[in-house]
Amino acid sequence: RGYEFVGLDRLGARKKAISISFDDGYRDLLDHGLPILEEFKIPATFFLVGAAAGRTDTWYRAEEKILDWAEAGELVRRGYSIGSHSLTHARLTDLAPADLKREVSESRRILEDRLGVPVTRFAYPQGHFNEAVIEAVREAGYEDAWATQSGDGSRYQRRRFRISASTGLVRFAAKIIKIRMGYY
Image 1 (cartoon, rainbow, N blue to C red):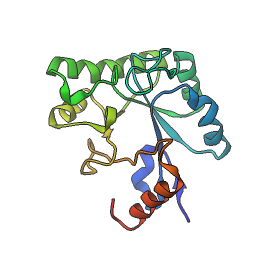
Image 2: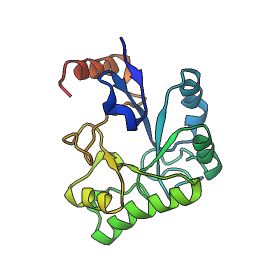
Image 3: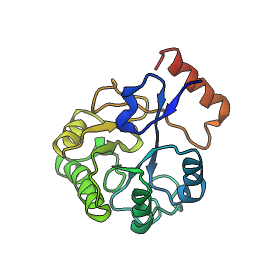
Image 4: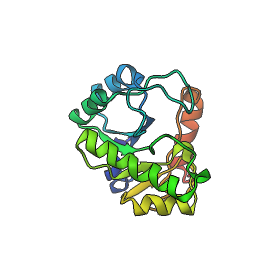
């Protein structure tokens, strides 16, 4: 249909562009996602939780392994982009100002230190944000921030469609149609 896969940094450069991003940093991406991305030469951004490397998640699945630092480093070596998904995957809108600042800024610092690349993008955990969260992200020096479907599309309220294992082909196609028809 004439669409091109591009990195998040080139998303606005083409009208028919699609960008792929993954939140959380689940280890199963290495077995299931990475082979497809590499086979079709699809760029992607991985939004990682700064304090979760090598652990299991504590926010959704509770038993899923998270990429360790060597595995995350392999993504960088293969040319994939890394963004921050907070320090602990906390619901940022519920945090006191000092905790919010720590969640946003410490995650960036840890990811940059451990992976040796600039981390300039942020994805809001569960897509939740408010003005205080946006300001914390801005103050931490991120270039932009990504939600899931909500937001006005501006620099710190960029929108993404959430696709999960339960989305299915019919719901996925419906989301694409909405984009093409301008409803998104």
